[in-house]
Image (cartoon, rainbow, N blue to C red; front, side, top):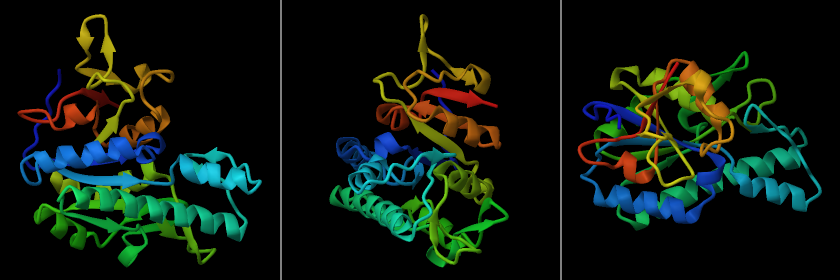
Amino acid sequence: MARPAVKETLYLVYLDRYHSGDEIFINNLAQQMHQAPAGDPLCLLVHGSGEKVERTLESQGFFPERTGGVLDVTEPEQVRLVERAVRETNQKVVAMLTDEVVPAVGIQGVDRNLLQLKDGAVTARKAGWVEALLKQRVVPVVSALVRHPEEGRVREVAAADALVALAQSFDALAPRAVFFTTGTQPGLADATGIRDAVSLDALPDDGPLPEPNAVRQIVGNGVPGLITTLEGLFADPGPAGTQVQP
């Protein structure tokens, strides 16, 4: 089983739609963080809108599709509903971490223009204040919200794009993306056990990964990945699972 080095490595935890909406999972994540040595491993959580907002929109007669991981909404009321859902998800995750005495700070991507959108690309600039939180062993929980430069309103972008932008901003911390499976095995398994590594070409579409395309997007943009479970992320002596190679 692969055990990436943890020293000076920032683990950018990708909270996919399935896991971000699972309160039991988030509570377990908070408990694991509480039980681990303070700030070890060094983590930053990234999320977008979860499945709840889709049900909310459907209840009001809206049935938008997801394009690139983002709900395709244009009407002002739908856009506001998505933004509110992302903010509420952020607040809930932070509250559950705080309940377990985990030092955490909720950050909307629009805060201090952390995430920006230009020519369709997401970037993260002026992130020194977030790095300062990390050095204090505080867990930042970052939402994929940006201010659209043409529309002049807050929009959700793909959480995968937000994570890549943050990884590029924190390049000195040797960032590694973390993807959780829906199974009990800390990684992808075959007949011989947990696989040490898997290439993007061999990544299964019908396996235990809720959003394999997000994994392809992130790793394909140069961010090393680790497929694991909560137990694998907080394993001793360090995070363990299946490494994802470009």
